[in-house]
Image 1: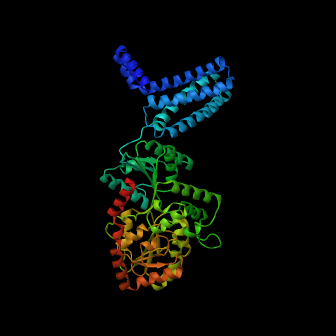
Image 2: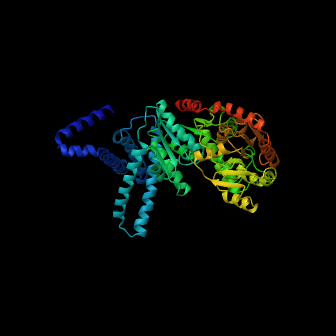
Image 3: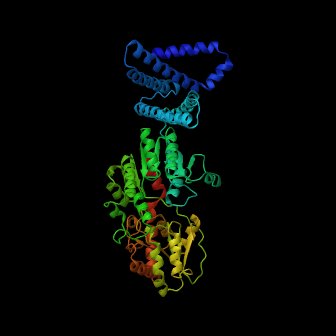
Length: 542
């Protein structure tokens, strides 16, 4: 190897003395492309030369000769491209690179065959001319793939974090808020951050998003957007030292494959069970399977339709292969263990809430407001709140229910309100800005969240900060936030009588409200933003 290097340097210096500066500058400008052509030509010469030697000199059957010469040609091409053309001298990834390089070669064979058939048989183009243009196209495609993926050198400073997320501001929701906090806070600890998200490019323009945020449009088929997401992550892996995926499927699955191809590790955050959520949405009703709602705990031990099981296999695989898992509650840690993730990989970090005081929404002095903030999906139990309103109105005719949020159940809920003639007492506000949501919490009298699943209830924490008494369910991560009869009231999911009685108790007992709200506000310390950032940084560093 040393002899080859010295010979190459001698030839290079000799040519620099002979060739005029104009041509020398031109060669330097396009030297990677020129090297690529020379390497490809050398591999082709090896192929043809060995084919002749093995067939005509040694006397092997020509098909055996073709196989042997092809293998040597492929190996020659790989080594020249890796160590000379692209100067990627690391041996750490050589096995994965060679497998990917070979797979690309066989893919090219398939593409060449298909395009030749189309050009010659369907379009009637002369086969030699067809092959000429197809070879050019494939050579260019190979150059791009090998330069940007196969032989792209890795970053060595261990300070680059790629966050792979599904939503990003101006999208509303806990995950979007969480990613924005990381984007603002992690660089203060010496890290660089880039973000891949689903969304539209207009969002970058309208919200002055950083150039380090890469958008994958949602306005395309799921397979195509997943592939584009995978491709973007794959390209950014040459920059990133750590990938932090914000979910196990739409974000995690493309990350899993990209990291697997590049022999890289990733960290995964899990805030719910995607397969369970999609099963509930597909059912399009609260009660399924023998007239009983399937809880997340029950879901773990049952089998369902093939589509649901496919989603379950994907999220389990992505979680099991993650280097570390971050969950926002001990309840979700238990779920992760049921997914087959070893306990030592699972880290519980409570989500932080950036508590903010805003001006209250104006409301008539004689009205009492129940406020519920939720995505309008079946398991959030909004229909139950609508159904108990007639009974509540018998006790207080000035009671109003403000339902804040959007989602697939919106039309069904509006129909339920109309059929029960409750338009004057119940309002579906739709999607609101964060400040508007906080304004409603400031104006409210009771916060109600009848949910069948909650990893860690973000809006409940904000309601507690706004001194709003809480009624919510004793499921999943809720008991880690609300302690029954101390910081709020816990009820059974979808239990109309319990929910109604809890609401009435708070509306009619100001001393109880004062006790609960004071205790609740004093309990918010464990959801401190700086504590979350510090714990997250420790995970990213490791």
